[in-house]
Length: 152
Image 1: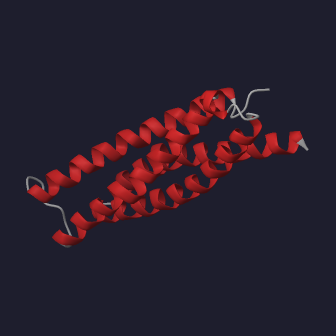
Image 2: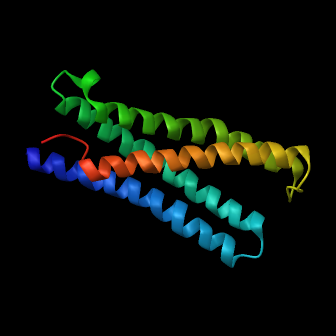
């Protein structure tokens, strides 16, 4: 039974982190390169990141529960638990803090963000923060993939 949990942990982690790499570093750049309409590319990418965030919350919650369970009561000393906690917090901040603010800015200006406007500057700041958090989360995920969620 222990091997089954280990396989589940590895599959969840690999799927979550693989999704982040695929969407963030493959699909999104291709969308912006192939579509002439940057707003459309951004909307599609935003939808994909939203799906990925919800998937990440599910995977992360399961992985965190498994890591806490397998720590045998010493979870507060397990660095993997803290990495997973940080990853979940990053997803929560991005999905329920930054993304709604970005959507609100886009809705307030209608069809296009015009470079040089205050709305554009606000959106760009939020987008930069979101991108940095995504890169951090992906990096943390890759660390976990390389060493595993739980110790042997």
